[in-house]
Length: 120
Length: 108
Picture (cartoon, chains in turn cyan, red):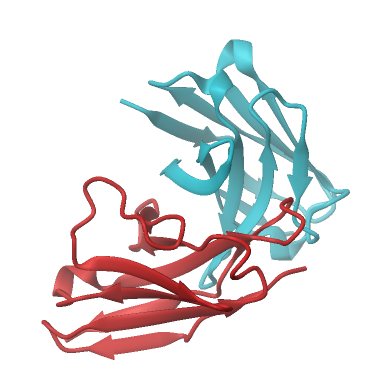
C-alpha cells in the first residue's frame, strides 16, 4: 500500500526550530516529487514547499522562504522539513503529499499530517 | 504571487447539482486540481488537469475550465459529499503551488 507517514510535530516556542519528517512506503520514493502542505486551525490548505524527485530543485511559498528548508534522503525513503524562526502563524497540521507525476502538480497521495504548535 | 478565489460556502439539497467555482490568474495556462477534504481525514483528489477524474471517484464529480474560471460540478449531490473543497494550481513561473481559500459544501 502506497503510504506517507509524518512525524516529529509538537509544541515549540516562537523563534525556535523544529524538523518534521515524512516516511514513504509502498512505492519507489526516488521517482516522485514531494510537497509539504499545511492547514492552520480553522483555516484552509496552504502550499508550503516542493522538492524534485532527485532533490535538484526546491521551491517555497513566500511565507516560509528563507526560514524553512525541504530535503530528502532517497536511500531512506524519507523527506524532512526544517523549520527555523518559527512564528505563531506557522501553527498548523503539516502534510507531506506525493506529486502525481513530474510533469503534473496534482497531489495523489497525502499523509495523515503532524501537528506543529508554536506557542510560548 | 498567484491567488485563487473560491466562494466560502455552497449549499444544495440532496440530488441537486452543486457548482463550486475557482477564479484566478494561473488559468487558463495552468491546470486546475480539485480536492475534497473532510475533517480529520487526508484530502482526496477528485479532479485533475481541469477535467479528469481519478479512478474510484464517482462519475457525479466533473470539472470544467473557461478563461480564468475553473468549476467543479457535483451532479446529484449526496449528503456524503459534504466537505470542504479546494482548488489548486501553480503560478505562471511553475515554481509555487497555490490553493484557493476553500468552499464548504452543505447538502441538506
